[in-house]
Image (cartoon, rainbow, N blue to C red; front, top):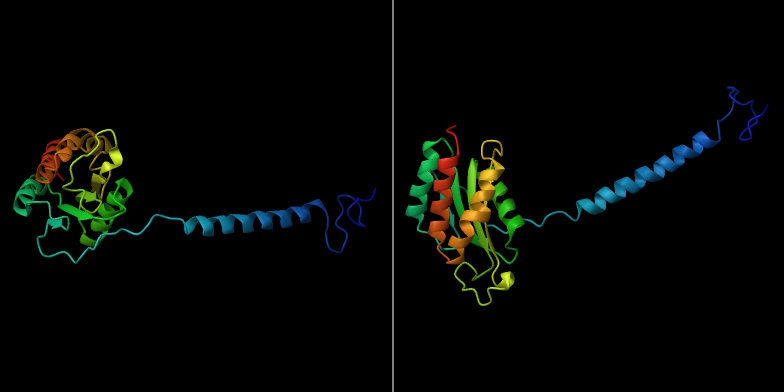
Length: 198
Protein backbone atom coordinates (compact mmCIF):
# COMPACT_ATOMS: atom_id res chain seq x y z
CA UNK A 1 0.00 0.00 0.00
CA UNK A 2 1.25 3.46 -0.87
CA UNK A 3 0.94 6.56 1.28
CA UNK A 4 -1.28 9.21 -0.28
CA UNK A 5 1.44 11.79 0.59
CA UNK A 6 4.47 10.35 -1.15
CA UNK A 7 5.85 7.73 -3.48
CA UNK A 8 6.98 5.48 -0.68
CA UNK A 9 5.13 2.76 1.09
CA UNK A 10 3.06 3.72 4.13
CA UNK A 11 5.15 3.54 7.29
CA UNK A 12 8.27 2.86 5.23
CA UNK A 13 11.52 4.73 5.30
CA UNK A 14 12.22 4.99 1.65
CA UNK A 15 14.73 7.61 0.54
CA UNK A 16 13.81 11.14 -0.39
CA UNK A 17 12.20 13.96 1.46
CA UNK A 18 9.42 13.14 3.74
CA UNK A 19 6.33 15.15 2.97
CA UNK A 20 2.89 15.05 4.33
CA UNK A 21 1.00 15.74 7.49
CA UNK A 22 4.05 15.80 9.70
CA UNK A 23 5.92 18.29 7.54
CA UNK A 24 2.86 20.51 7.33
CA UNK A 25 2.55 20.57 11.11
CA UNK A 26 6.07 21.92 11.34
CA UNK A 27 5.15 24.88 9.17
CA UNK A 28 2.05 25.59 11.23
CA UNK A 29 4.16 25.38 14.39
CA UNK A 30 6.50 27.98 12.92
CA UNK A 31 3.56 30.28 12.30
CA UNK A 32 2.41 29.81 15.89
CA UNK A 33 5.91 30.57 17.09
CA UNK A 34 6.02 33.72 14.97
CA UNK A 35 2.64 34.81 16.34
CA UNK A 36 3.83 34.22 19.91
CA UNK A 37 7.00 36.25 19.34
CA UNK A 38 5.03 39.12 17.79
CA UNK A 39 2.55 39.09 20.67
CA UNK A 40 5.38 39.22 23.22
CA UNK A 41 7.02 42.14 21.42
CA UNK A 42 3.75 44.06 21.14
CA UNK A 43 2.71 43.40 24.73
CA UNK A 44 6.20 44.18 26.00
CA UNK A 45 5.90 47.65 24.51
CA UNK A 46 2.65 48.19 26.46
CA UNK A 47 4.20 47.88 29.93
CA UNK A 48 3.91 50.17 32.90
CA UNK A 49 4.83 53.83 32.50
CA UNK A 50 8.14 54.90 34.01
CA UNK A 51 8.09 56.16 37.58
CA UNK A 52 7.68 59.94 37.70
CA UNK A 53 9.88 60.33 40.78
CA UNK A 54 13.08 62.37 40.78
CA UNK A 55 15.12 60.12 43.06
CA UNK A 56 18.49 61.61 44.01
CA UNK A 57 21.26 59.51 45.53
CA UNK A 58 20.52 58.74 49.16
CA UNK A 59 22.33 60.89 51.70
CA UNK A 60 23.93 59.17 54.67
CA UNK A 61 21.18 58.32 57.19
CA UNK A 62 18.40 59.79 55.03
CA UNK A 63 14.95 58.42 55.86
CA UNK A 64 12.63 61.09 54.40
CA UNK A 65 12.32 62.37 50.82
CA UNK A 66 9.53 64.95 50.88
CA UNK A 67 9.18 66.27 47.31
CA UNK A 68 5.51 66.93 48.11
CA UNK A 69 6.58 69.36 50.85
CA UNK A 70 3.90 68.07 53.24
CA UNK A 71 5.92 66.41 56.03
CA UNK A 72 7.66 67.41 59.21
CA UNK A 73 10.83 65.43 58.44
CA UNK A 74 11.92 65.18 62.09
CA UNK A 75 8.53 63.86 63.27
CA UNK A 76 8.36 61.26 60.49
CA UNK A 77 11.99 60.23 61.04
CA UNK A 78 11.26 59.76 64.74
CA UNK A 79 8.24 57.56 63.90
CA UNK A 80 10.36 55.48 61.55
CA UNK A 81 12.71 54.92 64.51
CA UNK A 82 10.37 52.21 65.82
CA UNK A 83 10.93 50.29 62.61
CA UNK A 84 14.70 50.86 62.80
CA UNK A 85 14.62 49.39 66.32
CA UNK A 86 13.17 46.22 64.79
CA UNK A 87 15.96 46.09 62.19
CA UNK A 88 14.11 47.63 59.22
CA UNK A 89 15.61 50.38 57.08
CA UNK A 90 12.38 52.32 56.51
CA UNK A 91 12.00 55.37 54.25
CA UNK A 92 9.16 57.88 53.75
CA UNK A 93 8.60 59.43 50.30
CA UNK A 94 6.12 62.01 49.02
CA UNK A 95 5.86 63.51 45.54
CA UNK A 96 3.41 64.90 43.02
CA UNK A 97 2.73 63.62 39.51
CA UNK A 98 -0.06 63.68 36.95
CA UNK A 99 -0.03 59.86 37.01
CA UNK A 100 -0.76 59.61 40.76
CA UNK A 101 -2.39 56.36 41.83
CA UNK A 102 -1.84 52.91 43.29
CA UNK A 103 0.40 51.70 40.45
CA UNK A 104 2.59 54.80 40.56
CA UNK A 105 3.04 54.49 44.34
CA UNK A 106 3.99 50.82 44.02
CA UNK A 107 6.48 51.50 41.21
CA UNK A 108 8.02 54.37 43.20
CA UNK A 109 8.31 52.16 46.27
CA UNK A 110 10.06 49.44 44.28
CA UNK A 111 12.41 52.03 42.79
CA UNK A 112 13.38 53.34 46.24
CA UNK A 113 13.86 49.77 47.53
CA UNK A 114 16.10 49.03 44.56
CA UNK A 115 18.17 52.23 44.41
CA UNK A 116 18.35 53.17 48.08
CA UNK A 117 18.52 49.64 49.46
CA UNK A 118 15.62 50.27 51.86
CA UNK A 119 13.75 47.39 53.48
CA UNK A 120 10.45 49.24 53.63
CA UNK A 121 9.11 52.30 51.80
CA UNK A 122 6.07 54.32 52.87
CA UNK A 123 5.07 56.42 49.87
CA UNK A 124 2.39 59.02 49.22
CA UNK A 125 1.77 60.31 45.71
CA UNK A 126 -0.70 62.95 44.56
CA UNK A 127 -1.61 64.95 41.48
CA UNK A 128 -0.15 68.47 41.67
CA UNK A 129 -2.02 70.38 44.38
CA UNK A 130 -3.95 67.34 45.64
CA UNK A 131 -1.93 66.78 48.83
CA UNK A 132 -3.56 69.88 50.31
CA UNK A 133 -6.75 70.21 48.25
CA UNK A 134 -10.14 70.07 49.88
CA UNK A 135 -12.84 67.66 48.76
CA UNK A 136 -15.26 69.60 46.58
CA UNK A 137 -17.70 66.77 45.92
CA UNK A 138 -17.62 63.87 48.45
CA UNK A 139 -19.53 61.72 45.94
CA UNK A 140 -16.78 62.16 43.32
CA UNK A 141 -13.63 60.27 44.37
CA UNK A 142 -11.83 61.69 41.33
CA UNK A 143 -12.14 65.16 42.84
CA UNK A 144 -8.59 64.59 44.06
CA UNK A 145 -6.14 61.89 43.12
CA UNK A 146 -3.66 60.66 45.70
CA UNK A 147 -2.55 57.36 47.12
CA UNK A 148 -0.57 56.10 50.11
CA UNK A 149 1.21 52.76 49.86
CA UNK A 150 3.67 50.53 51.66
CA UNK A 151 6.26 48.72 49.56
CA UNK A 152 8.54 46.18 51.27
CA UNK A 153 11.70 44.64 49.89
CA UNK A 154 10.59 41.32 51.43
CA UNK A 155 6.86 40.66 51.13
CA UNK A 156 7.12 37.68 53.50
CA UNK A 157 8.62 39.81 56.29
CA UNK A 158 5.91 42.47 55.86
CA UNK A 159 2.66 40.53 55.34
CA UNK A 160 0.13 41.72 52.79
CA UNK A 161 -2.77 41.62 55.25
CA UNK A 162 -0.96 44.04 57.59
CA UNK A 163 -0.14 46.41 54.72
CA UNK A 164 -3.69 46.19 53.38
CA UNK A 165 -5.24 46.93 56.79
CA UNK A 166 -3.08 50.04 57.16
CA UNK A 167 -3.47 51.30 53.58
CA UNK A 168 -7.15 50.50 53.07
CA UNK A 169 -8.65 50.96 56.56
CA UNK A 170 -6.44 53.00 58.89
CA UNK A 171 -5.00 55.66 56.57
CA UNK A 172 -7.95 56.90 54.41
CA UNK A 173 -9.76 58.81 57.19
CA UNK A 174 -6.48 60.46 58.24
CA UNK A 175 -5.50 61.34 54.67
CA UNK A 176 -8.96 62.78 54.04
CA UNK A 177 -8.05 65.62 56.40
CA UNK A 178 -4.68 66.21 54.67
CA UNK A 179 -2.71 65.39 57.83
CA UNK A 180 0.24 63.76 56.08
CA UNK A 181 2.46 63.73 59.16
CA UNK A 182 -0.22 61.66 60.92
CA UNK A 183 -0.55 59.40 57.85
CA UNK A 184 3.14 58.50 57.97
CA UNK A 185 3.56 58.38 61.76
CA UNK A 186 0.43 56.23 62.20
CA UNK A 187 1.49 53.83 59.43
CA UNK A 188 4.99 53.55 60.93
CA UNK A 189 3.58 52.88 64.41
CA UNK A 190 1.13 50.25 63.12
CA UNK A 191 3.90 48.53 61.16
CA UNK A 192 6.23 48.54 64.18
CA UNK A 193 3.45 47.01 66.27
CA UNK A 194 2.64 44.32 63.70
CA UNK A 195 6.12 43.26 62.55
CA UNK A 196 8.55 40.83 64.12
CA UNK A 197 12.13 41.95 64.76
CA UNK A 198 14.59 41.05 62.01
